[in-house]
Image (cartoon, rainbow, N blue to C red; front, side, top):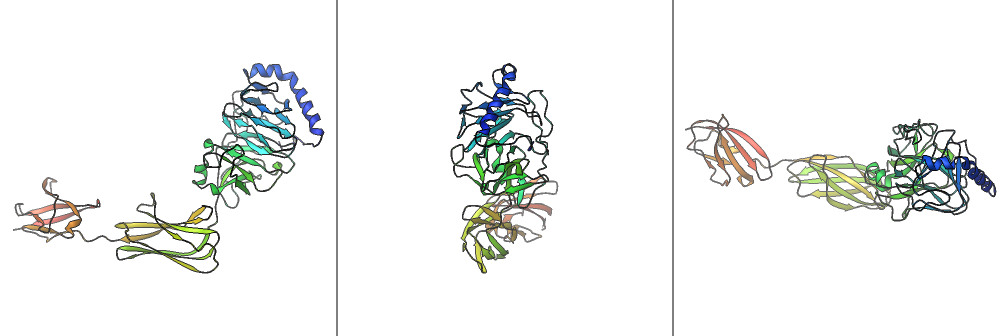
Length: 440
């Protein structure tokens, strides 16, 4: 597909656009009828706008709503925008170009492309740039053919594009969408997203990890790019919506397809040691760095099960350093039992990475019934921690339940001699069972 179209400059694009508009005339009546009110550009045909366009009101010979162009390789339709600094407004999930759009002329142009009821606009400035949006998994690269009611074969040429095949520092690639962008002239490229792109899931909620990725023929590679502070579509960039632009110009033909990917970010610090040990009823954490660049802070997180984590403290970092720096943090109220700790190493731009996990076991006080055997008073070690004491026989019948345990213990003098099951329920939810013999 990359070699099917060549761009021109100066007055050349005007002649090409006029020829494209004439080429459409033989199909236009059929197009209007076949699209049931929207405009259709059949395979091999082109249509050109010489001014701005609005998808809400239509114009330039088109109806409002979707403009459908044939996508089949070697015989697809194209909508041209011919003129300097043109705009296309009003695009939405209900009004876009379902297929290929090409721009002729100067100025950055936002391509109003979409697919399968989803808008997926991109932007470029180079004369002759052309592209289409595919709202489908790159691993199949097959989208709906609205002309036949079936699916196209994998598009563009070179597809499908395995998202498991990634280059250096690429963590994961979007399986929701991709773009085919063509052109020999260098240009910055901008991709846009909305809630349907699931950028939060892709990046783990860290927008600093987002990048544009390009398929180089064998794998997805990261293209240096930066999230736009103000989206090209307006508003501030966020996980829900925004745009991202390459940091330098490139010829779109450099890659077969483009999409979003999440990066493996380098650590803001070089962590050489991280340890956690029990110190009595506290947990002492210590770590050291040998290099820090743009580092802001360490957030200490704790978990009982490795699934739910919570921040329990913050330690400011040195920020910039190339020498050994030691850090310490004391958890004065660890959990009884297992305590999992990790460090969230946060950069000044709020990008972050996690350390390895360390485990500290905090032993609780001994809570047990005594003496054993017992004849009259069953005493409880650390009774202030006990919420309830219950006594069952070996058949499982409850004989005693005491909810106010005191230093006097539990009176078992009326129990028949034998073996009983004593259950201790602590205020922290811990439950323990003990076999106790009653004698006379």
